[in-house]
Image 1 (cartoon, rainbow, N blue to C red):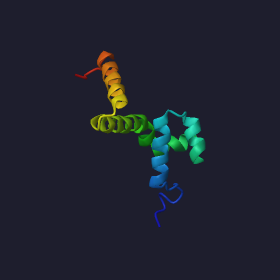
Image 2 (tube, one colour):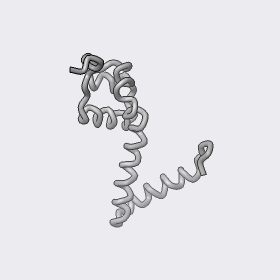
Image 3 (cartoon, rainbow, N blue to C red):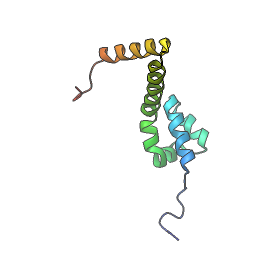
Image 4 (cartoon, rainbow, N blue to C red):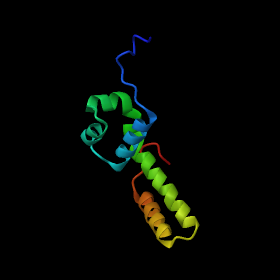
Length: 98
């Protein structure tokens, strides 16, 4: 028996995926914590990675789906990607970004 972690909750990959998905939608910390039945502190203690990268991963997944749709000739996907790329070109670059 591991006495050091005896009281630590064990979260499943399904719970981690859910937090990642919810963080990706832009829900508030409180709403995400409520959805998984935890406090905001617990959310950040055990799901910090999911909270920090959720939105970026979700947007990347959506961009991949748009790209696949554009590659098979879906004009609306092509237009949406062009708009996204145009906005990206106009935004100020972050420090150190090329």
